[in-house]
Image 1 (cartoon, rainbow over the protein chains, first blue to last red):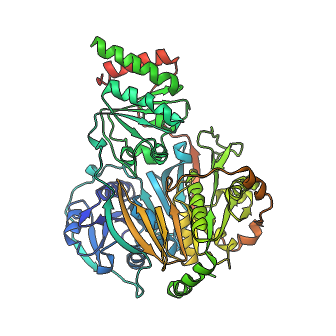
Image 2 (cartoon, rainbow over the protein chains, first blue to last red):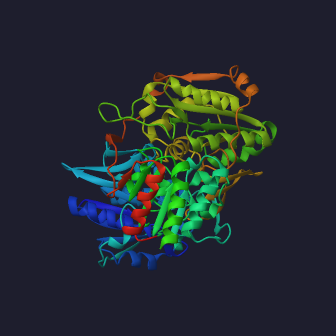
Image 3 (cartoon, chains in turn green, red):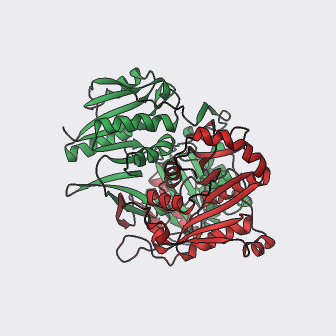
Length: 329
Length: 278
């Protein structure tokens, strides 16, 4: 049997999580180098139409892993069903999108199979027949190349935004419906409806200019610096998680994996160090200016302009300079 | 002990015990490099040098705070555990000063680089027979960032878990929890105890240690667990860091290191003439 890369796709409430296509793109890229075959599996209940949607990509096969017990996500049911499925199919490599759901069940699934999961991988390397995954460590200050020590199936979860979903190759795959294995005992976690707290007051995804504030702002009273800069640029204020945790900006202005994903023409990060969780939210920004006193701040790796300096001096100067430029224009 | 007993049996018995004795809570915390501290690689490029500044992993601090609040509401006990070199005792002392009742230190340099599965195995070995009702830890660490140790500990102990929790309410039958999902979505879930939860930063407001707390911490029990005590329970590492390196820039980045006024001029030049956004 040919070696297979199995992509575990994700759906919720009748819709595919689009990041599934990013993971398919990653799998297709690995397959090009290794010669392995790519298949996908979608766990859920009544998900044939969604499996068909996945089948529009260049895959050898799509399996709809179906059971009423998988209608609402629980880690117990997912681990049980996928454990049996993987034991049966014996793929060489299992790839997941690094979503909150995958974080919830994939480590347990790996351990139940006596395997390991490399989580939050940003890329891969295929060197002398060995497959390595790269991931960020120490809040993005370093990158690690990580290898698997044991036997296949190897498992890795791919960071959101690391591969482009729109670059997943199209094709036409057969869909196989597989009845999922279901445990005799009920799942221990009882899930209720998924909801949104309130309609988001601010839709940062549509903002053209965003001034994002990070931990470097130090105190709430210093937020005025960001407000002034946002005012002269006609921009919206955003923030990394700690600022919203502190209550200095409302939660709906949080940018990153747990907040909003933005794609402005201009993003200015002040005192934002650039933890992965924030960076995934700003990858779509056209121009990124970062101001940070730490010359090794990870945000500089994605910045077009890296200003190494004290934001308490740079930001007021920049605000004045932009005022002048606008007045002159 | 937790073991592989049917969880139904445990949760059938436990509500009685909670009302009588409150909750017995364990908090797993980790010492990580300080956020702003410069880090250097070791000579082999496989790990960082140890001469850094250290602090409690931030999400773990929120997990501790939540445990203390639950104890204040329902009574019981809060124990803290960490696995790491001698320097890691500092995060335990801080936790005791904030109000934890006792601490467990798996003390050895080798604990610092264990993968998530072996860290979970070591922790499970160290708390064998303890019967905690609730185990909480941060949703991920600021060093590895694997977001796995807590989930794996639950698997090893055979208890249910829930991740990225931002609200905890004890009910008659177990727990009602608010789980954070992506992009501003949330979900309430219910589960029996014993259970393991990974806690999201921002679930509460962190407290500071008081002077009295710091004084009292010195008299609180701290149990040490050696490498030899748990070594037999570890497996071979199934993932290995081959090398660690400073990431290359993903873009052509213009670096500006100049006095503020000059830096501001250069940024505006860029915004006008190259990015065309001003």
